[in-house]
Length: 333
Image 1 (tube, helix red, strand yellow):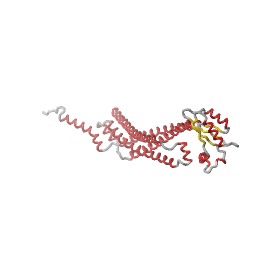
Image 2 (cartoon, rainbow, N blue to C red):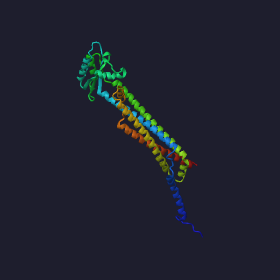
Image 3 (cartoon, rainbow, N blue to C red):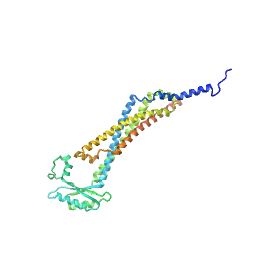
Image 4 (spheres, helix red, strand yellow):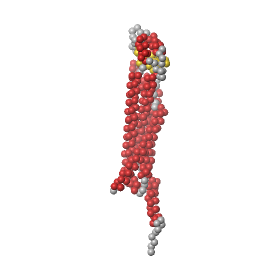
């Protein structure tokens, strides 16, 4: 009479061995070959795409930072300075009028100081439009007095304007509020548009990673299904994709971020090298020093990390959704 093996004996051990072998199979396949090949055409193309998107995103971020800082400078200039402009007229002693305007302004509370813009400085201001070697005495060029005001206790501009007009009919006070407010509004609009463009670029990066992940899964679908059916958890498969796409994303994002930093350094070097020219002075007045500062470079580094993490997270979510669809089809079948 043949004895039946008791539970836990030969047959029991055989079942246990098959179960352990099936569970160990994903680990063995993982050691033998990765689910997502590290070197393939799609992977290299994805690195290039992520690098380009990161480069453009960092440039957009840097431009937004530059415009925002410049707008802040403009807003501060509103509260720091005003200008008295004196137009030339027949029989007008320009130098005496300039001194008189400076004296009137200095007598008002809230005015910290005045400065007459001399002939040489006036000629430099007009040089980009009228050329060098200009003799301003031969042209009806207005002269300026810069008034430095107390930001915390500004003067009564209406009273100051009235006092100047009463003694100097050809003089006018400009507190720059009208045109600077327009420039600041334009800068804020530019910042908003830049943020919107940055969001679109990040969205395009996410969609690119989704398509790349689905393409990688389609190319390795038989391996994924075998792993899934022999007991590999979805988290294991998703982790393999996440690891590979994190490396891919960081390579592309790092390359794009480094290229953007080089562009910013080149622009900053160019601005510093041409600082003494009138064109550079005008550009600096409108756009600042073309330097994004340490906060801008820190933002670029943060952008690289965000895009790398976004690539990995997008790949993970795509794989989980794909495997969930497989389970639903298996259940329905």
